[in-house]
Length: 592
Image (cartoon, rainbow, N blue to C red; front, top):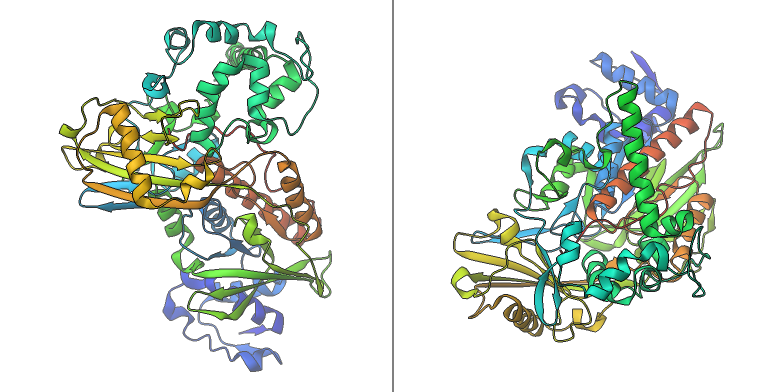
C-alpha cells in the first residue's frame, strides 16, 4: 500500500506517457478517479513494486519518474534529435508538429523512382552526427555517393570540373590564370576594410559585411563570381551579397580576426593539428581520431563526407520517430500559445509552462498541457504569432525582428539513358549567376550518385530555382519551371525528348537568410531565453541550415536543458546562456 498525494496524482496524470514500458495489464488495477484524487488523498493498491517506486519518485520530485517534462515545438530533424536525447536522459517529452514530421526532409517514390523533396544529402560535420547515427543503428543503411570528387560549375555556357585538390585548382577551367595567381597571393594582397593592404593582425570589425565583399578583399572578384556564388546558391539558396560573413561563414570571419590572411589562418590550424598528433605519439598516446568524421574515418578510401540513406533521406527522421515513440509526436497540432508561471512554494524558484495548441481537425478549440520546459525549433515567423503570457501578464512579441527567407523550387525530372547525349558522371553542377543564359541554381545528378534512385535504363535529376538570386522565379507555375529546367539540362548534358517523370516542389520559406542585421535575430532568441525561464531555442535559425547542423543543434540543446532541469531540482540552479554555440560555417552542400 502507498499513499498517493494530490501532487503525485497530478504528476501521474501529467506523465502517464512514461508508463507504456510497463505491460498494459500491470496498470489495469490503477483505478484513478481524477475528481476525488485532486480534492483529497487516496490510498491505492498497486500490484507491482516498480509502480510503487514510480509514484514515490514522482511524489518526491514533483514531476515524473523522469527528471521533468519538456514540450518540443517542431518535429523537423532538430526537434526529433532533441526528443531522442530527452528520451535517452529520462525526460518525459511531447513533440508538437503542425504539419508532417521531418520538416523539409521528405522522400517520395513511384514506379521504381525515388526522389527528395528537400535536401539530398547530409554531412558528418560534427561528432554528434556520427554518434546519433550509430545509436540509431543506421550505419548499414548509409548510402555513399558513387563519386563525390566530380562536381561541376558552369563557365562560358559549359560544365567545367570544380577543383578537388591543389593540382585540380591549378588545372581547372573554372578560373582564369590571373584569378588563380591572385588566390595564391592572398597572404600578401588581402586588404583590410578601408582598402589598405593587410600584412598582419586582424581587420576592422564589420558584423554585417557580406560574404562577397569579405572574400573579394581576400581573393579577388573572379573567384567570388565563379566559386563562392554557386557554392552559396547550393548550400543556402543565397548569393554572396545577401549573406553576412559573420553569421553565414563565421569560421572565415574568425580566421581574419585572428590571423588576417585566410591562408595563414588555415595553415596555422593545420600545423596545430599536426603538432597535437606528434605530441601524442611522443607521449605514447594514440592520437584521437578526427572527431568530425567518426563514420567516414572508418571506411578506407572515403574522401568525402556527404551521404544519404538507402530509401532516401527520410530514413533519418523515420528512425528518430521510432526511437522517440510515434505516440509522443503530435502531428497536426499547431502551438498557439505559452503561459508560464512560478510553481508555488518551489525552492529554488521553478517555472512551469502551459502549452496551448489546436488540432487540424478542430482549429477553433484550444487544448492545453503543462511542462517544465519548452524547446522551440519551429521557424521564428511562426513564433511571432504565439500568445505568450508570463506570470499572468502578456509578454509581447512585436519587438521580434523580421526574418528574411529564401524561397526555393525543386524540379525533379527523369529521362531514358538514350535521351541523354552528353552525360556527366559525378555529384552535380552549380550555376554561377554570371551565366545568365541559365535559370537554375544547380542540378543534382541523383541517379549518378545513388543507384537505388531509378529503375535500370533511366537517369534522375533534381534542379533548383529561386533563392535570393531570383525570389519571384521560385513561385512561378510548375509547367514554366519544368520547361526552364529542361532547357538548362539540354545545354549541359544534351537531354532530348520528354521526361518520363516530372515533379515540382515549392518551399516558400526554404532557408532563413543569414544576412545584414541577423545579429538582431540571434540576440532576440537570447533575450527570450533570458526573460522566459524554461523556454529555449534551437534549429536552423541558429547555425543549422544543413541537416547535420540541425541535428547537432537539437541534440545539444536537449543536453543543456537536461542539465538545467537537474540543477533546478537539486537546488543549485545554473544559467544556460544559450542552447547552441554562435553561428559557424555552413559546411553541407544542399544542392551539389
